[in-house]
Length: 119
Image (cartoon, rainbow, N blue to C red; front, top):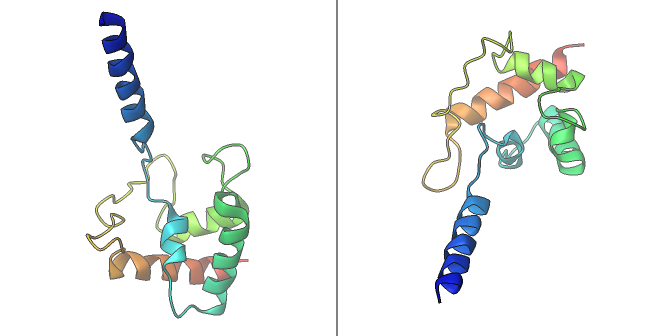
């Protein structure tokens, strides 16, 4: 009886830990997917993100490594120095209706335009 209870508690604990999402930042690909009435640059990014997922902006082995486009987008989002960058969690948090704020959408759109212009 005691063993069965321990197994049940242990299983519940493991399931709880597995369901916790430990993402520190917003998945920008989710925000990109919600862009409507897209420009050519936004449409190109949506297609690349759909095909390559996070690897379009990040390296294949680690999300800490950014591709050339990822660095352009990071700078356009106001990143600058990666060590001093302050991520605004409140701005990128989803609303109750599972959408992002218009300010966050506009910031991402402006960043995509700026990254597309950088050569």
